[in-house]
Each structure stands twice: as C-alpha cells, then as structure tokens.
Image 1 (cartoon, helix red, strand yellow):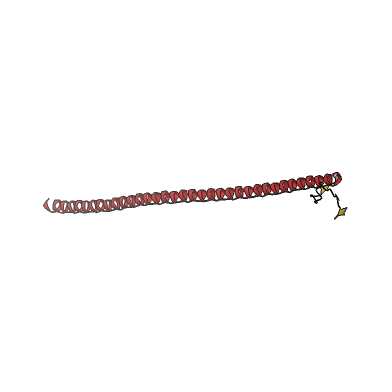
Image 2 (cartoon, rainbow, N blue to C red; image 1 turned 180 degrees about the horizontal axis):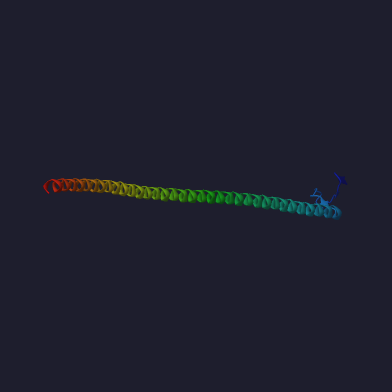
Length: 149
C-alpha cells in the first residue's frame, strides 16, 4: 500500500497485531539519501554560517584595527602638536630673554653714553673756565706789566 508517496509493506508478526510498518528497501534508500542530503545541507549551512561568522569576525577585527590605527594617528597628531607648541613656547621664551638682554645692553650702553656725554660737558666747561682764567690772568699780567714799567 502507498501513503503519501512512501511505500509500506504491511507485516504481521504472527500475533495478528499490527506491528510498526517496515519500509521497503527503496523507501529506506530514499530516506537515507534524504537524510544524507539533509545532513550535507545542514553541514553546508553550518559551514556557510561559520563562513559568514568568520567574515563578520574578520570585518569586525578589521574595523577594530582601523579604529585603533585612527586613534594611534590622532594621538600622534596630538603629540606632534604638543611638541610644536612646546618648541614654539621655548622659542618665544628664548626670544623674550634675548630681547630683555638686548634691552638691558641697550640701556647700559645708553647710560654709558649719557654718562660720557655729561663727563665731556664737564670737561669742556672746565676747559673753558681754565681758558677764561688763563685769558683773564694774561690780560691782568699785560695790564700790570704795561703800567708798572
């Protein structure tokens, strides 16, 4: 007899009771083939799922690596910026010190020049006073020499 395309042969075990039907060897072969096909399909689906998981894991890992690389580059950029700022600050400080020392030098040289100018004026004044004194003295000697003689 045939049920849903599966052949069954009815067997009685002698007691007259219906025992589980035994399938024909053709049906058993078809079932085994179908089971094997299902197992292969299950394995293929499992392998595909594993493959997809591996692809996803690889993509996720690559994305993580890219993120780490991006962060590393950002940290390097921050470090470079900090170094540049430190160098700039150092140069600014050096220039300020140089300007200060140059300013101090200019101040000192200016003060020296003022002091020397004042000294020259004093010497010039002294020289004029001596010259005037000598002229006055010479005039007095001339006058006394001319009247006394």
